[in-house]
Image (cartoon, rainbow, N blue to C red):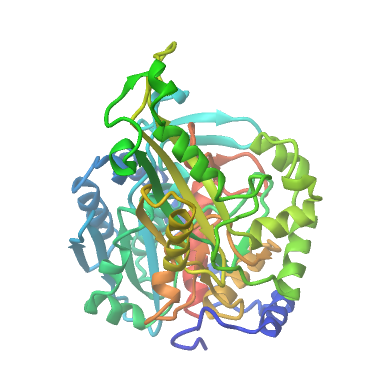
Length: 505
C-alpha cells in the first residue's frame, strides 16, 4: 500500500543507491489485468478521432504569456477541457498575472493523485514553420510515422490531451478512474511561472493536494528509438533581463544619436557587453559571479545513473539532432552528461539594442538589453542567485544596469523510492520497457511548489509517446507510429490508463 505522502528531497546518497538497484526488482502485480483494461483500450481506439480533434482545437487556441495573447480565453478553454473530462469541481483562479485552473475529480477511490498542467505555449514566428503553427497539420515524418505539427504539440498539449483522452475512455467504458485527481494548471510556465504560488497556496488547493501521493505532469517520455528516461527532478531557473541605458547610467545618450558621436559619447551597448563579460570566465562557461550559490556535488549513485544512461544513449545521434560537433571542453560523452546534470548555467537567450533591420544604420543606441536564463541545481536557490548577481554587478561598477526578473523557481528533487516513481517503473516494466533512471532534467518546471514547503510531495513526469521541437519551429507530437518500440497517440493514452491503475495499487 502507498503512504499518503512521500518526501521529495533531502535523501542521503544511500537511498539513491538503494533505489537505483530497486529498479530491477519492481513487482509485476497490478490492480487491473490486461483483460480488465480491454474495454478501456477499445474505447481509446473508438475515440481516437474525437481525441485528436480535441488536441487540434486546443492548439488552435494559443495562450502566450510573453505576448499577453490568448487570455483569459486560454484559461477558459482549459477549464472546459477539465469539465468535459469528468472533473466535478472546476475553478478559474485569478492571480497577479495570468489565471490558473484548479479542478478535482472525486472517483470515490482510496487514493488521490495530483496533476500539473500548463496551458500556455512559447512564442512562434510562422515564417520559420513548414506549416501554420496553429493549424495542427498531420504530416509524415520519416522513421516515425504520422505526426501533428503545431505550437504546443509536445510541450505540453499533446501529452496532456492524451491524459484527458484516458479519462474520457475510462468513463466511456463505464468505469470510474481508479484514483481521485487534483488538477493544477497555469498559464505562465513559459515565462518562469511567476505566480504559480498564488494558485497552489490557496487553502482549498493545498488541502486537496495534501491528500495526494504526489503530483505528475503528463509528458512524452520516449525518444525516437523508444528509450524512456524516468527523471527524479529538474533544474531550477531564473529568467531575467539586464538593461543598460544612458538614462540610468548617467553616461551615454538618452536617445539614439549618430554613430559618429561615439568619439566623444559613451555607449550603453558596450557597457552592457562589458558587464556580461564579467559573469563568466574566458571559456564562456565557468560562472564567475562573486558569491554565487554553489551546486551540490554529484553522489556516487547519481554518477552511476548517469553512466548507465550514457551507455544506452546514442552520442552521434544526439549530436546530429542538436546540430553540434563537440561538447564543452571536448568532454567524453559520459562526462558531458555529468556536466549536463550537475552544473548551473548562465545563458544569453538574446541581445537587443539599436538597429537590427536590413543593411546598416549608423546610430549609437541609448539602450541595450540582454535576455538571460540561469539554470540552478540542488544546493542553489533562486533568490540567492539573483542577490549574488546584483551584488556582483554593483561591485564591478555596473550597479546602474537594471536586473528585471520575470520569473523563476528553485530546483526539484524526488526520491526514487517514492510511490509516485515506483508506480512509473512498474508501469513501464509491464509494458516491456527497461527505463533509465536519471537524477534530473536539464530543463525546468515549477515542481518546487509541490516538492518544497509546505507540501513536500513527490513530483515528476510520466507518459509514453514521442515528440520533439519544443520551443522551436515545426514542434511535433507522434500520432500514428511506424516504429515498433515507440507509441503513438492511442498508445500514449493507454500509458496513462495503465499508470493510474498502478498508482491505485
